[in-house]
Structure formats: structure tokens, C-alpha cells
Image (cartoon, rainbow, N blue to C red; front, side, top):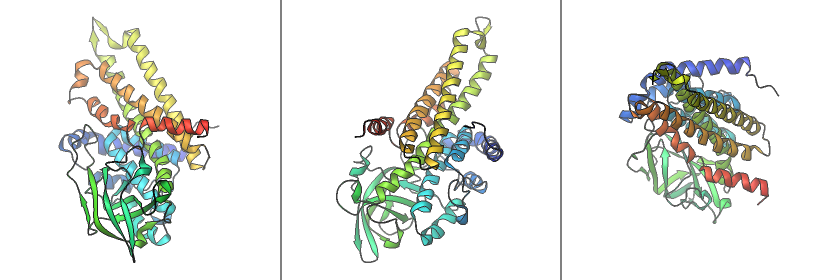
Length: 379
């Protein structure tokens, strides 16, 4: 085992860190308060290769590994956790087309997704199918050269703004084997969107319901074969879980670094906060837990990249642990700032609001425990 990053990994880590500090961090508060989707900044990230991190390079991707992606997302999340999380979702959707689409589909969709000229959304969750994703009800009926879609998707990042919607729909009977994956393009007749959701965090990315009413989608947009959609969706989520875990680590590291500096300066009872042993021990615990989470994420990322049979379990473990630790560390850092941490003048409350949803999306942490326990017990 070699725990050192390669020269290339250190190079794109530094690139992501510099971009986060120069282009994301100074604007993150305004994006949050104005609920602004930072299109030009996203395209700036794509110009560095972050629009298709593990998409093949023949269609404009960077052809990096899942481990490489986690290194990048940890850095981007320190600039703006919400925006980094959207880049993660966009990458997940693009990879699904790259990995399971035809050559025609790859060349049609991916060059503009990798440059972020076009944006992508991942559409699995429905109003009545959240954790129980295999019960989704959006129907796709074959009609000649088209599928006719009816139904709705909920909590879709990029909803109403994205150009490409990678959708899981029911083409067959009940259960996971009746689900297929199809790309619905913006402007397709019968495609519409709900009002933008008002959220606790993740305000730099739009979130809306995606609705289909007699929505005619060319059959050539089917990704893979009928009945493969659930498998495609779950494989996409393996990577998505790693990325969102890395975003939690990055957000928490950002808060911890600021808290260390704050404790060196802040004095109470005539003593710097950093000189109180109880508070020093809290910092030590936070740093230890973040390092453990980082190692878990990188181990799982390597397994997923290598096609390890245990990759899904390791990704679920890492996602559960890192997102729980990330929230706990950010919350603890807010506490160490006292009343100042609760003010919007300081960024910690924003990061707290952003990382909270990481324990819910890409499969709730309760579902992560279900995945792990099923793998351990064999049922």
C-alpha cells in the first residue's frame, strides 16, 4: 500500500484548491444568499477538466479514477460545498452515459457535458419512491420510434436548468428488473418542471420536480437495454456516494481550519481558547475523525475503480461514515465559535446547512447501513 499521492494527483489537487480559493470561496456567500446558480464558474471548473472527471478522454473527459475524483471534490468543497456537490451530480450523470451509452450517444451528449456547455441531472427519486427506489412509478411506454413518459421525479438538482436529464423509468413490470434508463433532453414536448424548492442549504444549485406528461422521447436515447436501468443507477450512485462523502470532508476541513485560527486568536477568562485542554482535545478528535473518513473514502474509491466485488459495500460504508463525521465536525466547529458561528457573517453556518443533506441524498445513511448489513449477512 502506498498512501502518498502521485505527482499527477498532487498537481490536480493543487489546481482544484487554487480554483476553489480564487473562484468559489469569495462568491459562495452571495451564491447562497441570492440562490444563484454560478454558470460561468461551473464552466471555469470544466475548463480545468472537472466537468467529466472520470469520463473517457475521447469525448472530452479527463479519464481520471474515482480516487482522483475524491481528491478533487474535497478541494472544491472547501470553496463552496453546495456548488461542488452539483459538479458531483453532473459528473455522475455524464459517467452513466459514457459507461453504458452507445458510441452515438456518447458523442452526442458528452462533449458538451464535459465542457459544461450543457448541464446534467440525475433523475431517480420520485414523490412516492425515495429510499425504496425500485418502486418508482414513472412509466415509459414504447410507441414506435419513441418512448412516451408519464410521471414525475422529485428533488432533482438542476431541475429546470439542466439540458440533459438521465432518468430511470419503468418499461416493464414491478421491481428493479422493470426499470430502464433514458436521456430526456430539455425542450422535449411534455417535459415540464415544478417551482424551485426552498431549501435549508444547497442554495447555489436549483432543485425542482421534473414532470413528464405524454412526453415523447426518441427510443435512441435509451441508455443500455430495457431492464438495465436500476443496475446503471446503482453503479452511478457508487461514485456519487464517494464524491458526496469527499464534499463532506472538504466542507468539514474548511471549518476546522478556520476554527483552529479562531481559537488561536479568541481569548476568554484571560486565556486563548487554544490553551484550554478540553477544547484542544476536541480539535484532536475532529482531525482524527476526518483523517479516518478520508482514508475510508480513498480505500472505497480504489475498490470501485478496480471493480472490486466489495466496492458497493465499501462505498456505502465510506459515505455513511464521512457524511456523519462531516456534519458532526462542522456542528462542533460552529459551537467552538460560540455566537459568532451562528451569524451569517461567518461561513460555518452555511457549510452546516450544506453538509446536512449529505446524510440524506445518494441514499440515506440508514440505507447505507442496509446495504452493508445485507452484504455481511448475505440477504
